[in-house]
Image (cartoon, rainbow, N blue to C red; front, side, top):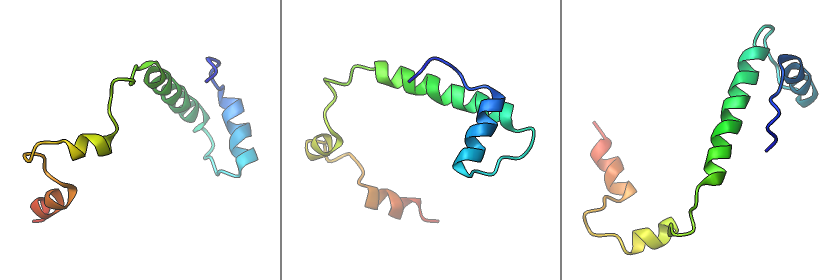
Length: 78
């Protein structure tokens, strides 16, 4: 991802180009949000996940104490 941040006028132009309605005066907020998302993605890309096993493998070897999604839903119902 580029380290160049979008300016509010660029946000307005890209929104118009994409056909996304953007309320007047929201350009700065959208630009700040886009910059934050870019920062988070940059941090995530730097993580070393080579030693992290896929979730399917983790679930297959998980202890019986792990709650399945179906059990979680049943438990969450009020």
